[in-house]
Image (cartoon, rainbow, N blue to C red):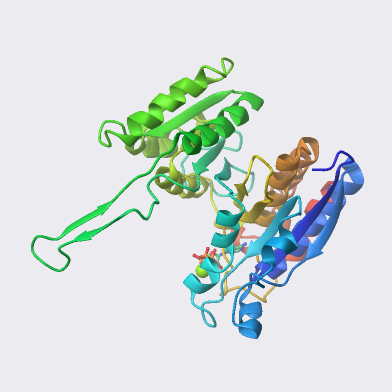
Length: 358
Ligand code: ATP
Ligand code: MG
């Protein structure tokens, strides 16, 4: 991050509706730049897309790390065009490489009920649901340590280890406590399962308790993952910052946004808080081949991702202004896209959000 509040952003639209919603995100960033005095240099990259794969036989150039590793952030659309390239090839050849090579150990997803978005939970209004899910993104249950013994026989045994390191657990907890400390409610909830998973989860709990001592302003609690999932549905108003291991966080970070309506508006950050490497901001949705090219994709997930990116860069006022502009626009039925039952196209909705910022 530069002292002078100018930022170099690597822009990677990717595939499908990524190419339609990313320009709307950039439009909104330009609008916010004019009003809040932060400046952006956008560098466009055509790799990490299936078009690139079809031309080059690989998803990215060999020097991709050098090309984007020095940027302040990556603004990403979506990857995947399963008709042309199998999803495991396109995903593993791009996004997963970014997450690993840039040590983006935090997966951050806001869960916020917006006006105009039908909530699947009865009786909930905007304001009732407003929290973050913080998922550990590099270790835990998603380790490749394990294997099969006596494969194919009656004595077959299959094992896969959960690996938690002190460094890995502490760094995600630190991020979550710091986030909670900055928020009004200053409340952190930890997902555990120490009654059933009797070695790693008690360790996780122990580290939460140790970390909490350093954040006396933060009120914290913990729930077993099963009841926590139920509480997401029955008491979403209880939460402020929810921190979880890789597997539990994976589940909660889909359940949370599902409780607040459509996939078209949810954003995500893949964050390297140490700023040694660029963090990546993207909508939760994919390339949506079924609606690509029609100009009807909801741009809000991408635009909200821009707000997450600004938060990460320290431009918190500009970030809050984008979220407020999204709320203003979604409250008007004629500016909603078809996935929300409205008549607006991608550009109309994106322009309206940019205009609300001027
Ligand atoms: P991924 O590429 O992450 O695997 P997916 O293939 O599971 O994603 P998406 O591409 O997100 O799923 O699409 C799922 C459904 O949601 C599709 O019917 C798609 O049209 C719809 N959808 C996704 N994003 C949007 C959006 N921004 N606006 C409107 N509809 C969307
Ligand atoms: Mg897909």
